Amino acid sequence: MSGRKSADLGGMAEGLRAAVHDYVKHVNQAEIELKADGLTGIVSDCDYLARTGRRLSRLEERDRLRGAYPERHESRARLLHIGATERDGEVPVRLELHFKRTLAQRGAGYAEERLETERLWLAEANGRWQIARIEPEIAERRSGASGDPETEDVPQENGRFQPPQAVKSVSVPYLNDDLLPYFNQHRPSIPYRRDLAAAYADRWWQQPNPAYENMQVNCTNYVSQCLFAGHAPMNYTGKRASGWWYKGRSGGQELWSYSWAVADALQRYLSAARAGGLRATPVDALWQLKLGDVICYDWEGDGRYGHNTIVTAFDREGMPLVNANTVSSRHRYWDYRDSYAWTPRTRYRFFHIADLF
Image (tube, rainbow, N blue to C red; front, side, top):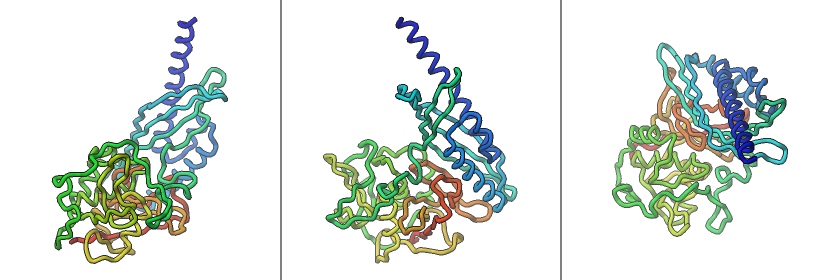
């Protein structure tokens, strides 16, 4: 009996893997054609199909308007976990997708990449597994944004705000002087090394730097690390609601400022005028941005910024390409119209980081 049960489980796993492989193949084709039509035969989740169709339509229109033409698209997948069968007979699966899209523009080409983790629920019908539901595990904007640490209002000293939770404790509690050469030292005329900020962003875009905490909502923590790698000096106040600083974790206590790890808090910090330390100037035009500058995203246009990126390259038209985390991205076109988080109400803030601190 146990041998028959093992064979049944093995057959189920094989069927699930085949269905996931077929899904990845059709996803890659949809990204090439910029149409979701081919997914309808293997995915029965109407909401997912509608979201994907709208996203690909926006992407097709944007590419056409900017004169960028997709030359190649690669989709690599890693099956992370197959869960136990749920009461309704569906089997949950965790899947990591690595997309690499190569575009040609005015005689030159560049590649943009992103990593996404999805949860799929598969159901068997007539001896065949089909995908019943698909949800992003962590997206640029999660459902229930009012409870999302990345979009909550920044608290006062006695506020009840809960900061983004670290995935695991990996950083040393107090970084040493070799790792923090400019920690809380407001020496004049420290140049912002834009090249180092961009190089750091490219080095760590798809894996966490073990010298820092890796947070579940990691976009602002990642951007702050990039700024610091470019020699932006920390402003250590010891108070979470002020300054811009990071010291790691000690005894279970999170030792970093809200501005280091919370999207709207960093946007507010960059907006404020100050005499020294990390400073930025809000600018209106994209052509005013340089390597290492920051773009902030307000998905609903309500004044609360829920995502941040850092400029790491430019296309042939001089438009910024950005890196980001949470959904790990490298050299992605700045407007994020290819994101499920984007809405027609989306607003942006562009910050030019000071050349000298």
